[in-house]
Image (cartoon, rainbow, N blue to C red; front, side):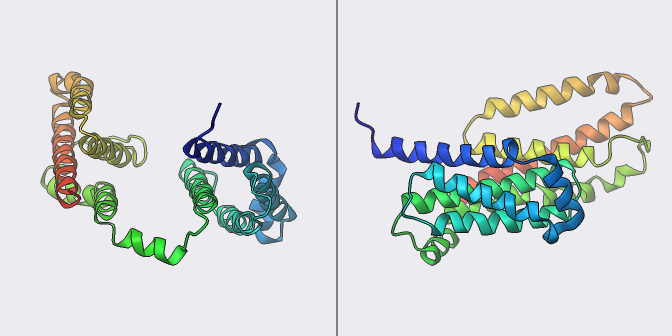
Length: 244
């Protein structure tokens, strides 16, 4: 069976991802993580783990003539884990850490598959790619900037609702996730997904609206939700317009 170039490149990406998973989750001991959190750059496990990650990339890549890309993985993995050692063990820092590692893996894969790749030309290309810039701007806008805008719009009604103690920042995160999903649905033309989100949110709040004690709270949340949905939908339309 003949293996195409695309299949070889995808296989390489899968091997690099496998190298990352093995290094970060199977060969890394909990004591190493604890040592990094306590001793930071003085912890020997910091350098050992980064070296293992780089060696696995080298072995799994199959490109045994190339030492620069494993060195790139070594340095970036070391820097990322050093930064992570100064943070807490919350989910957001874990996800940020993994996101950076995956970006590095993607960059390594790109460098392996594009021998004539020039980093300066590539960066310049990204900054002049209208569609990419429009999409990135759209996703950035529907996160915290939109949250601040919605808070300002709904401010006149905030003093009319009860100060119930819910999960810390849960509403803010729910709103951001909703807007990200809606923007994604608009960009991939899956508008039924938006209808599903609206229906699900309405069903969850229907009982609260019928209850006189919670009616104001429910109406306030639904108002914020509708504003959030409108912002995300029109952001998606704007992104499509500027990236057409």
